[in-house]
Length: 164
Image 1: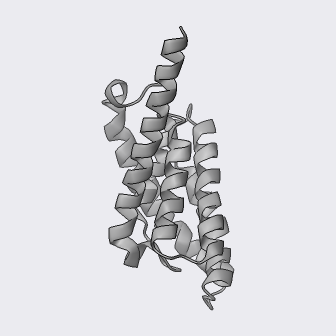
Image 2: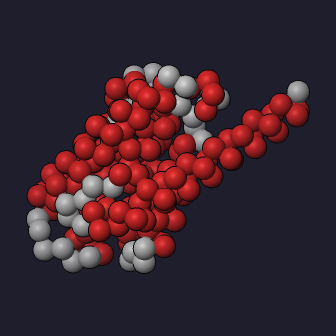
């Protein structure tokens, strides 16, 4: 029985690492549209993955952290941008029994946290409520639209890709 537990741990670690790498790979080449008051981060579609596996929580979190570090983001963005992704992933996992609500936590956490990061780390002059709308709209497109398309596609091959 102990071997099965170790196998599950290894599988979870591998899943988290692959998700982190995918997140970074989908963020880095699209950096010009992934940052700023109006942003569309394609990698945010992966924040629906906690619906399938808890390994996605550290996966998307580490992917966000890695992306922000590699792109030379200021420390507040590295810290609080990563926290926004972590919070969204945790609450997405908690909502996994409600498939179409899984996308809501990442949208809300980013719309509420990232405008403050933009204001204080990047000195963006826009009003925080305006940036909440613009960041939120980008998240709706990335997570609400792309993320749900990804969720529906992955649901068809759930048994092959994810273990719970």
